[in-house]
Image 1: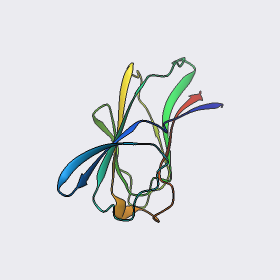
Image 2: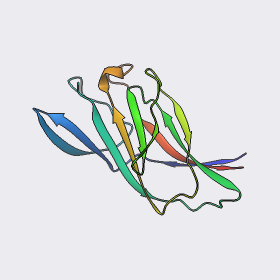
Image 3: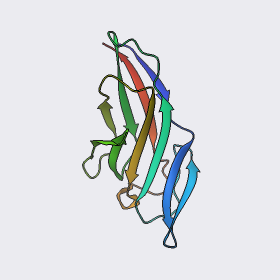
Image 4: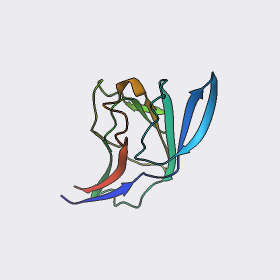
Length: 129
């Protein structure tokens, strides 16, 4: 079984609450969050469907170093709600995969396993059957 990884590093949109107001910023992963980050926030990223051969390959999402991850949404539907303390996760994506996709992550910094440790190595995995 072979794998090809497409890393989702750049161009995430982060929605944070600062001073009672929502602030949207570009975020690149992995990220080192500031020590004063204390409220849950949302990260989202749009991307195109990678070229795969549906009869021979499947698509997964792989998450590493994501302590504090509350929920994973794929195209508006909740895909997972990891247990508290989960740092690594792999999720299979259902077929067919739409041409345009949106991945959204809800994160609670209270669940981080240590400030200053880079957070979030996320990839689409194309795996042969």
